[in-house]
Image (cartoon, rainbow, N blue to C red; front, side, top):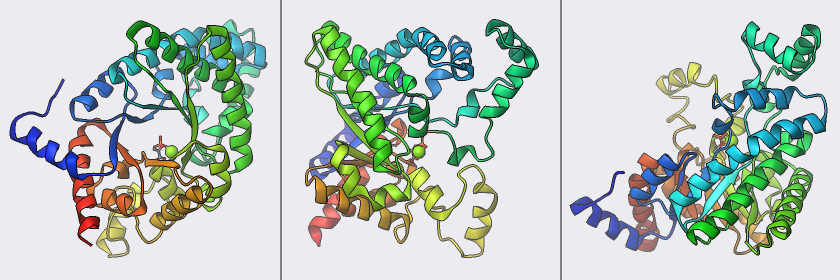
Amino acid sequence: EPELSGHFGQLMEWADSCRTMNVRTNADTPRDAAVAVGFGAEGIGLCRTEHMFFNEDRIPSVRRMILSKTKEQREKYLAELLPMQKEDFMGIYKAMKDLPVTVRLLDPPLHEFLPTEPEDIEALAGDMDMSMDEMMSTIHGLEEFNPMLGHRGCRLAVTFPEIAVMQTRAIMEAAIEVKKEDGYNIVPEIMIPLIGMKEELDYVENVVRETAEKIKVEKGSDIDYKVGTMMEIPRATLIADEIAERAEFFSFGTNDLTQMTYGFSRDDAGKFIGEYKEKGILPNDPFQSIDVNGVGKLVEMGVKLGRSTKPDLKIGVCGEHGGDPKSIHFFQRAGLNYVSCSPYRVPIARLAAAQAALEIKEK
Ligand code: PEP
Ligand code: MG
Protein backbone atom coordinates (compact mmCIF):
# COMPACT_ATOMS: atom_id res chain seq x y z
CA GLU A 1 0.00 0.00 0.00
CA PRO A 2 1.22 3.47 -0.79
CA GLU A 3 2.33 5.67 2.08
CA LEU A 4 3.26 9.30 2.00
CA SER A 5 6.68 9.73 3.51
CA GLY A 6 9.70 12.06 3.45
CA HIS A 7 9.24 15.67 2.38
CA PHE A 8 5.87 15.00 0.85
CA GLY A 9 4.65 13.39 4.05
CA GLN A 10 5.91 16.41 5.99
CA LEU A 11 4.12 18.80 3.65
CA MET A 12 0.93 16.82 4.13
CA GLU A 13 1.25 17.04 7.90
CA TRP A 14 1.56 20.81 7.65
CA ALA A 15 -1.48 20.91 5.39
CA ASP A 16 -3.44 18.82 7.88
CA SER A 17 -2.60 21.20 10.69
CA CYS A 18 -4.25 24.05 8.70
CA ARG A 19 -7.40 22.48 7.40
CA THR A 20 -10.81 22.36 9.02
CA MET A 21 -12.62 20.04 6.59
CA ASN A 22 -12.08 16.31 6.85
CA VAL A 23 -11.05 14.34 3.80
CA ARG A 24 -12.75 11.02 3.30
CA THR A 25 -12.68 8.62 0.39
CA ASN A 26 -15.10 6.94 -1.95
CA ALA A 27 -14.28 3.24 -1.72
CA ASP A 28 -16.20 0.03 -2.22
CA THR A 29 -13.47 -2.57 -1.74
CA PRO A 30 -11.10 -3.26 1.18
CA ARG A 31 -8.21 -2.67 -1.26
CA ASP A 32 -9.40 0.84 -2.23
CA ALA A 33 -10.11 1.58 1.41
CA ALA A 34 -6.56 0.57 2.41
CA VAL A 35 -5.00 2.62 -0.41
CA ALA A 36 -6.99 5.65 0.68
CA VAL A 37 -6.01 5.24 4.34
CA GLY A 38 -2.36 5.11 3.18
CA PHE A 39 -2.98 8.46 1.49
CA GLY A 40 -4.48 9.89 4.67
CA ALA A 41 -8.23 9.38 4.19
CA GLU A 42 -10.09 9.96 7.44
CA GLY A 43 -13.06 7.74 6.68
CA ILE A 44 -15.24 6.50 3.85
CA GLY A 45 -17.69 9.14 2.67
CA LEU A 46 -19.30 6.88 0.09
CA CYS A 47 -19.26 3.12 -0.16
CA ARG A 48 -21.32 2.38 -3.26
CA THR A 49 -22.91 -1.05 -3.03
CA GLU A 50 -23.96 -1.56 -6.63
CA HIS A 51 -20.69 -3.04 -7.92
CA MET A 52 -20.90 -5.73 -5.27
CA PHE A 53 -23.94 -7.17 -7.02
CA PHE A 54 -22.32 -7.68 -10.42
CA ASN A 55 -19.83 -10.28 -9.22
CA GLU A 56 -20.05 -13.57 -11.15
CA ASP A 57 -21.03 -15.53 -8.02
CA ARG A 58 -23.83 -13.13 -7.24
CA ILE A 59 -25.42 -11.96 -10.45
CA PRO A 60 -27.51 -15.16 -10.79
CA SER A 61 -29.15 -14.55 -7.39
CA VAL A 62 -29.49 -10.83 -8.14
CA ARG A 63 -31.26 -11.53 -11.43
CA ARG A 64 -33.57 -14.07 -9.88
CA MET A 65 -34.34 -11.61 -7.11
CA ILE A 66 -35.34 -8.73 -9.36
CA LEU A 67 -37.31 -11.00 -11.69
CA SER A 68 -39.21 -12.63 -8.82
CA LYS A 69 -42.96 -12.23 -8.73
CA THR A 70 -43.40 -12.23 -4.96
CA LYS A 71 -41.78 -10.73 -1.90
CA GLU A 72 -41.22 -14.24 -0.50
CA GLN A 73 -39.30 -15.24 -3.60
CA ARG A 74 -37.22 -12.07 -3.47
CA GLU A 75 -36.44 -12.73 0.18
CA LYS A 76 -35.21 -16.20 -0.66
CA TYR A 77 -32.66 -14.85 -3.17
CA LEU A 78 -31.71 -11.99 -0.88
CA ALA A 79 -30.93 -14.56 1.83
CA GLU A 80 -28.37 -16.05 -0.58
CA LEU A 81 -26.78 -12.64 -1.03
CA LEU A 82 -26.71 -11.68 2.66
CA PRO A 83 -23.57 -13.60 3.74
CA MET A 84 -21.61 -12.23 0.77
CA GLN A 85 -22.78 -8.68 1.42
CA LYS A 86 -21.87 -9.06 5.08
CA GLU A 87 -18.37 -10.15 4.12
CA ASP A 88 -18.02 -7.10 1.86
CA PHE A 89 -18.69 -4.80 4.78
CA MET A 90 -16.53 -6.73 7.23
CA GLY A 91 -13.58 -6.36 4.84
CA ILE A 92 -14.17 -2.64 4.50
CA TYR A 93 -14.63 -2.04 8.24
CA LYS A 94 -11.43 -3.95 8.99
CA ALA A 95 -9.50 -1.86 6.47
CA MET A 96 -10.84 1.34 8.02
CA LYS A 97 -10.39 0.28 11.67
CA ASP A 98 -12.06 2.93 13.84
CA LEU A 99 -12.62 5.45 11.04
CA PRO A 100 -16.19 6.34 10.01
CA VAL A 101 -17.80 4.44 7.12
CA THR A 102 -20.81 5.65 5.17
CA VAL A 103 -22.52 2.84 3.27
CA ARG A 104 -25.08 3.79 0.67
CA LEU A 105 -28.06 1.59 -0.05
CA LEU A 106 -28.35 0.17 -3.55
CA ASP A 107 -28.60 2.79 -6.30
CA PRO A 108 -28.19 1.39 -9.81
CA PRO A 109 -30.72 1.73 -12.55
CA LEU A 110 -32.37 -1.65 -12.15
CA HIS A 111 -32.12 -2.55 -15.83
CA GLU A 112 -28.35 -2.92 -15.44
CA PHE A 113 -29.02 -6.25 -13.74
CA LEU A 114 -31.29 -7.63 -16.45
CA PRO A 115 -30.00 -10.60 -18.44
CA THR A 116 -29.37 -9.89 -22.12
CA GLU A 117 -27.92 -13.14 -23.50
CA PRO A 118 -30.62 -15.49 -24.88
CA GLU A 119 -29.06 -18.53 -23.17
CA ASP A 120 -29.05 -16.71 -19.79
CA ILE A 121 -32.68 -15.76 -20.24
CA GLU A 122 -33.65 -19.29 -21.15
CA ALA A 123 -31.79 -20.76 -18.18
CA LEU A 124 -33.41 -18.27 -15.81
CA ALA A 125 -36.88 -19.05 -17.14
CA GLY A 126 -36.21 -22.76 -16.53
CA ASP A 127 -34.92 -22.21 -12.99
CA MET A 128 -37.71 -19.86 -12.05
CA ASP A 129 -40.47 -21.99 -13.48
CA MET A 130 -41.56 -19.35 -15.98
CA SER A 131 -42.46 -19.74 -19.61
CA MET A 132 -40.25 -17.82 -22.04
CA ASP A 133 -43.17 -15.48 -22.75
CA GLU A 134 -43.64 -14.80 -19.07
CA MET A 135 -39.91 -14.22 -18.60
CA MET A 136 -39.69 -11.83 -21.56
CA SER A 137 -42.65 -9.81 -20.37
CA THR A 138 -41.17 -9.61 -16.84
CA ILE A 139 -37.89 -8.35 -18.34
CA HIS A 140 -39.67 -5.81 -20.57
CA GLY A 141 -41.64 -4.64 -17.54
CA LEU A 142 -38.37 -3.66 -15.86
CA GLU A 143 -36.79 -1.93 -18.86
CA GLU A 144 -36.72 1.85 -18.73
CA PHE A 145 -36.59 4.65 -21.29
CA ASN A 146 -34.74 7.00 -18.99
CA PRO A 147 -33.01 4.92 -16.33
CA MET A 148 -31.01 7.78 -14.79
CA LEU A 149 -34.31 9.44 -13.86
CA GLY A 150 -36.06 6.16 -13.27
CA HIS A 151 -36.33 3.27 -10.90
CA ARG A 152 -33.17 3.75 -8.85
CA GLY A 153 -31.99 4.96 -5.45
CA CYS A 154 -34.57 5.18 -2.69
CA ARG A 155 -37.26 4.36 -5.25
CA LEU A 156 -35.90 0.81 -5.25
CA ALA A 157 -36.13 0.70 -1.47
CA VAL A 158 -39.75 1.89 -1.68
CA THR A 159 -40.78 -0.73 -4.22
CA PHE A 160 -38.56 -3.52 -2.85
CA PRO A 161 -38.03 -2.72 0.85
CA GLU A 162 -36.65 -6.23 1.38
CA ILE A 163 -33.47 -5.16 -0.45
CA ALA A 164 -32.94 -2.37 2.09
CA VAL A 165 -33.67 -4.86 4.88
CA MET A 166 -30.99 -7.25 3.61
CA GLN A 167 -28.42 -4.47 3.21
CA THR A 168 -29.15 -3.00 6.64
CA ARG A 169 -28.79 -6.45 8.15
CA ALA A 170 -25.43 -6.94 6.41
CA ILE A 171 -24.20 -3.47 7.47
CA MET A 172 -25.20 -3.97 11.11
CA GLU A 173 -24.22 -7.62 11.54
CA ALA A 174 -20.82 -6.93 9.96
CA ALA A 175 -20.21 -4.04 12.35
CA ILE A 176 -21.22 -6.12 15.37
CA GLU A 177 -18.97 -8.98 14.30
CA VAL A 178 -15.94 -6.82 13.53
CA LYS A 179 -16.36 -5.11 16.88
CA LYS A 180 -16.32 -8.52 18.54
CA GLU A 181 -13.37 -9.86 16.52
CA ASP A 182 -11.13 -6.79 16.32
CA GLY A 183 -12.46 -4.44 18.97
CA TYR A 184 -13.06 -1.61 16.47
CA ASN A 185 -15.82 0.69 17.52
CA ILE A 186 -17.76 0.98 14.29
CA VAL A 187 -20.71 3.33 13.99
CA PRO A 188 -22.16 2.53 10.57
CA GLU A 189 -23.59 5.49 8.69
CA ILE A 190 -26.37 4.22 6.47
CA MET A 191 -27.04 6.55 3.56
CA ILE A 192 -30.20 6.66 1.49
CA PRO A 193 -29.73 7.75 -2.14
CA LEU A 194 -31.83 9.93 -4.42
CA ILE A 195 -34.18 11.38 -1.83
CA GLY A 196 -36.39 14.13 -3.24
CA MET A 197 -39.27 14.04 -0.77
CA LYS A 198 -39.40 13.90 2.99
CA GLU A 199 -42.02 11.15 2.70
CA GLU A 200 -39.56 8.93 0.84
CA LEU A 201 -37.08 9.39 3.64
CA ASP A 202 -39.77 8.70 6.27
CA TYR A 203 -40.60 5.42 4.58
CA VAL A 204 -37.10 4.14 3.91
CA GLU A 205 -35.66 5.36 7.20
CA ASN A 206 -38.36 3.43 9.05
CA VAL A 207 -37.43 0.26 7.20
CA VAL A 208 -33.75 0.78 8.02
CA ARG A 209 -34.31 1.66 11.69
CA GLU A 210 -36.77 -1.16 12.33
CA THR A 211 -34.31 -3.62 10.86
CA ALA A 212 -31.33 -2.20 12.73
CA GLU A 213 -33.18 -2.21 16.05
CA LYS A 214 -34.32 -5.79 15.51
CA ILE A 215 -30.75 -6.89 14.87
CA LYS A 216 -29.48 -5.12 18.00
CA VAL A 217 -31.99 -7.11 20.06
CA GLU A 218 -31.22 -10.38 18.26
CA LYS A 219 -27.49 -9.97 18.80
CA GLY A 220 -27.71 -8.39 22.24
CA SER A 221 -25.68 -5.46 20.92
CA ASP A 222 -25.84 -1.79 21.86
CA ILE A 223 -23.99 -0.70 18.73
CA ASP A 224 -24.75 2.80 17.52
CA TYR A 225 -25.56 3.74 13.90
CA LYS A 226 -26.69 6.75 11.92
CA VAL A 227 -29.13 7.17 9.08
CA GLY A 228 -28.62 9.99 6.62
CA THR A 229 -29.31 10.99 3.08
CA MET A 230 -27.72 11.95 -0.18
CA MET A 231 -28.56 15.48 -1.32
CA GLU A 232 -28.58 15.01 -5.06
CA ILE A 233 -32.01 15.96 -6.32
CA PRO A 234 -32.65 19.71 -6.58
CA ARG A 235 -35.94 19.33 -4.73
CA ALA A 236 -34.15 17.85 -1.72
CA THR A 237 -32.03 20.98 -1.37
CA LEU A 238 -35.17 23.13 -1.49
CA ILE A 239 -36.78 21.24 1.41
CA ALA A 240 -33.55 20.45 3.27
CA ASP A 241 -35.04 21.83 6.51
CA GLU A 242 -37.76 19.16 6.41
CA ILE A 243 -35.31 16.45 5.41
CA ALA A 244 -33.01 17.37 8.29
CA GLU A 245 -35.81 16.55 10.74
CA ARG A 246 -35.17 12.93 9.80
CA ALA A 247 -31.63 12.75 8.46
CA GLU A 248 -28.65 12.55 10.79
CA PHE A 249 -26.26 13.67 8.05
CA PHE A 250 -26.29 14.97 4.48
CA SER A 251 -23.91 14.12 1.67
CA PHE A 252 -24.12 16.15 -1.52
CA GLY A 253 -24.12 13.98 -4.63
CA THR A 254 -22.96 16.68 -6.97
CA ASN A 255 -22.87 14.32 -9.97
CA ASP A 256 -26.62 13.85 -9.93
CA LEU A 257 -27.24 17.35 -8.63
CA THR A 258 -25.38 18.74 -11.65
CA GLN A 259 -27.21 16.41 -14.03
CA MET A 260 -30.60 17.39 -12.71
CA THR A 261 -29.96 21.10 -12.25
CA TYR A 262 -28.66 21.59 -15.78
CA GLY A 263 -30.90 18.89 -17.21
CA PHE A 264 -27.72 17.41 -18.75
CA SER A 265 -27.69 13.62 -18.84
CA ARG A 266 -24.57 12.25 -17.18
CA ASP A 267 -24.43 9.60 -19.88
CA ASP A 268 -24.75 11.93 -22.84
CA ALA A 269 -23.33 15.32 -21.84
CA GLY A 270 -19.90 14.30 -23.17
CA LYS A 271 -21.36 14.58 -26.67
CA PHE A 272 -21.77 18.37 -26.49
CA ILE A 273 -19.86 19.76 -23.51
CA GLY A 274 -16.60 19.97 -25.52
CA GLU A 275 -18.35 22.13 -28.09
CA TYR A 276 -19.92 24.26 -25.35
CA LYS A 277 -16.47 24.94 -23.94
CA GLU A 278 -15.00 25.76 -27.34
CA LYS A 279 -17.80 28.22 -28.08
CA GLY A 280 -17.48 29.86 -24.68
CA ILE A 281 -20.95 28.81 -23.54
CA LEU A 282 -19.48 26.90 -20.60
CA PRO A 283 -16.15 27.88 -19.04
CA ASN A 284 -15.66 24.41 -17.50
CA ASP A 285 -17.24 21.03 -17.50
CA PRO A 286 -19.74 21.36 -14.63
CA PHE A 287 -19.38 17.65 -13.92
CA GLN A 288 -15.70 18.22 -13.09
CA SER A 289 -15.72 21.56 -11.33
CA ILE A 290 -18.67 22.80 -9.31
CA ASP A 291 -20.89 25.35 -11.01
CA VAL A 292 -20.77 27.97 -8.28
CA ASN A 293 -23.53 30.14 -9.75
CA GLY A 294 -26.14 27.43 -10.17
CA VAL A 295 -25.53 24.03 -8.62
CA GLY A 296 -23.46 25.72 -5.91
CA LYS A 297 -26.43 27.85 -4.89
CA LEU A 298 -28.42 24.70 -4.27
CA VAL A 299 -25.57 23.36 -2.14
CA GLU A 300 -25.53 26.58 -0.10
CA MET A 301 -29.30 26.49 0.29
CA GLY A 302 -29.23 22.85 1.38
CA VAL A 303 -26.58 23.60 4.02
CA LYS A 304 -28.42 26.65 5.33
CA LEU A 305 -31.85 25.01 5.48
CA GLY A 306 -30.48 21.74 6.89
CA ARG A 307 -28.67 23.56 9.69
CA SER A 308 -31.71 25.74 10.39
CA THR A 309 -33.28 22.51 11.66
CA LYS A 310 -30.14 20.90 13.11
CA PRO A 311 -27.36 23.43 13.78
CA ASP A 312 -24.73 20.68 14.11
CA LEU A 313 -25.84 18.68 11.08
CA LYS A 314 -22.82 16.92 9.59
CA ILE A 315 -22.59 17.64 5.87
CA GLY A 316 -20.21 16.35 3.24
CA VAL A 317 -19.90 15.91 -0.48
CA CYS A 318 -19.20 12.66 -2.30
CA GLY A 319 -19.61 13.55 -5.98
CA GLU A 320 -16.60 13.86 -8.33
CA HIS A 321 -16.27 17.48 -7.20
CA GLY A 322 -15.10 16.32 -3.77
CA GLY A 323 -11.65 15.72 -5.26
CA ASP A 324 -11.46 18.86 -7.40
CA PRO A 325 -9.33 21.65 -5.79
CA LYS A 326 -11.43 24.57 -7.10
CA SER A 327 -14.62 22.91 -5.92
CA ILE A 328 -13.02 22.16 -2.54
CA HIS A 329 -12.51 25.91 -2.03
CA PHE A 330 -16.20 26.37 -2.69
CA PHE A 331 -17.19 23.60 -0.24
CA GLN A 332 -15.06 25.23 2.46
CA ARG A 333 -16.91 28.52 1.96
CA ALA A 334 -20.25 26.69 2.00
CA GLY A 335 -19.39 25.27 5.44
CA LEU A 336 -19.14 21.56 4.71
CA ASN A 337 -17.58 19.25 7.31
CA TYR A 338 -15.89 16.93 4.83
CA VAL A 339 -15.19 16.12 1.21
CA SER A 340 -14.99 12.57 -0.07
CA CYS A 341 -13.07 11.62 -3.21
CA SER A 342 -11.44 8.69 -4.96
CA PRO A 343 -8.39 7.24 -3.13
CA TYR A 344 -5.75 8.74 -5.43
CA ARG A 345 -7.20 12.23 -5.04
CA VAL A 346 -6.99 12.18 -1.24
CA PRO A 347 -3.57 13.91 -1.07
CA ILE A 348 -4.58 16.72 -3.42
CA ALA A 349 -7.83 17.13 -1.50
CA ARG A 350 -5.87 17.47 1.77
CA LEU A 351 -3.73 20.21 0.23
CA ALA A 352 -6.70 22.00 -1.33
CA ALA A 353 -8.64 21.86 1.94
CA ALA A 354 -5.67 23.43 3.74
CA GLN A 355 -5.38 26.21 1.17
CA ALA A 356 -9.13 26.82 1.32
CA ALA A 357 -9.07 27.10 5.12
CA LEU A 358 -6.11 29.53 5.00
CA GLU A 359 -7.83 31.62 2.34
CA ILE A 360 -10.83 32.13 4.59
CA LYS A 361 -8.66 32.93 7.62
CA GLU A 362 -6.79 35.60 5.68
CA LYS A 363 -10.01 37.41 4.81
C1 PEP B 1 -23.49 11.67 -7.05
O1 PEP B 1 -24.55 11.62 -7.67
O2 PEP B 1 -22.79 12.71 -6.98
C2 PEP B 1 -22.96 10.48 -6.36
C3 PEP B 1 -21.93 10.56 -5.55
O3 PEP B 1 -23.58 9.29 -6.59
P1 PEP B 1 -23.40 8.44 -7.95
O4 PEP B 1 -22.25 9.06 -8.69
O5 PEP B 1 -23.12 7.05 -7.51
O6 PEP B 1 -24.72 8.62 -8.58
MG1 MG C 1 -25.88 9.96 -7.36
